[in-house]
Amino acid sequence: MAKTKSNDKQLSVKKIDNGIVIDHIVTGGAFYVLQALNIDVHFPHSVFIAMNVPSKKLGRKDVLKIRNIGKEDLNLDVLGLLISGSNFICIENYHIVHKEKIQTPEKAYGVIKCPGISCITNLREDVETEFTVIGSNEVGNRENLSLRCVYCDKIFKILENISLIQ
Image 1: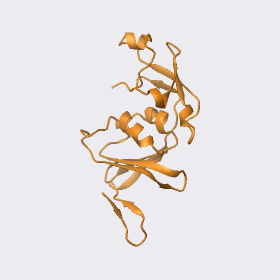
Image 2: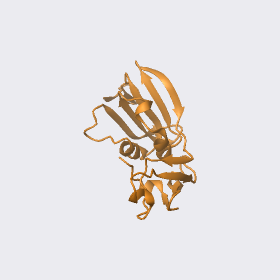
Image 3: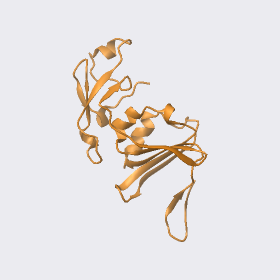
C-alpha cells in the first residue's frame, strides 16, 4: 500500500476511493483512535495507519485512512476527547467532500464508562454516563485533559483511564 518514490525518497500512500482520513494526529494518538472505533483484526474494511511520520505542522504525526466508512459511522465527540485539533476528511469517489477540524466537546454523553466504582451509572443500566470536560486538549497538552462525572464527581485523566461503553 505504501511505496517510496525513487527520485525524491518521500513516502507515498495510495488514495482511497471512499472513506475517511484523519490527519495531523499527535504521534501515538492513532492507537487511541483505533480503540475508540473498535478497529481490530476483525474489522471488515481496509485501514492504513501511518505513525510518527514527518510533519511541517507538528514535527511528527500519525495518519489514519479507513475505507468504506463515513462521518455517520463515528462519534466525533469521542475523537475530540482523544485527538482534538486533527483534521477529519470524508472522501467519496477519490474527492474530498467534507473536511473539518476535530474539536474537544464540552460534555461527553454515554460513550465513556465512569471509573467511579459506586457511581450510579455503574449500578443501574438505565442511567447514561455524563461527563464535563476539564482542561485543554490542545496539541502538546492532551495529557492534562480530564473528565468529571456529573453523578459521582469522580475526576480522571482521559488518556489514563479511558474505558468506552461498547
